[in-house]
Image (tube, rainbow, N blue to C red; front, top):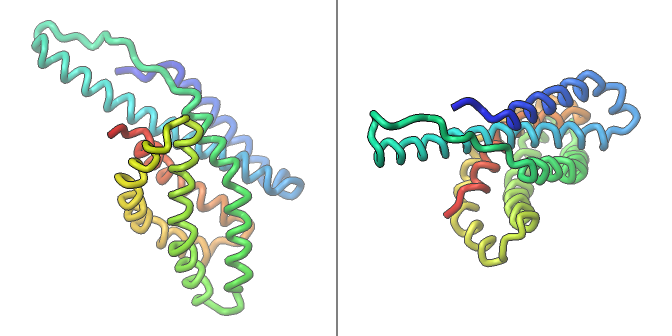
Length: 217
């Protein structure tokens, strides 16, 4: 199945925006640091959702193709079914989350740097990771699931169901990725670039979250 034109167009536009923001990062960060990081994070979140939607389309088409083959047999089976189109609102919702969450991330990393200064040595980085994963990660996952439920106008009962069925599994997945990523971040990345580094790694994480959020039970 060829990808729909809407998906290709969104990917092209997003790649162009990311390239421009990256190229102008030093200049714009010096003038408006929060806005610069916010736009980059929004673009990275949008990129993640484009990947997630492409995966969803592929899986959905595979299921449809399998059902058609089972019903009509190989001899009469064709792949002419119309490709799905990009869900623009889903992409916008995730991009806005990336934008809105940036001030929280910036403030949190600044607080960690204050509480555990570099003068304390490598143990400061370890303490930042422990604090981040014990406090910020569990709250962040809850906030993400709650935000998506709110902007998708889901009833409160559905949010409770999502939290009951998915929260723990997402938190476990978080602990497979983020402790190591954050240790690298706090040990080797200057404070100025820590949010950017996290959100580059988060392309994979946000793709995972987008897929989990759009799994219907």
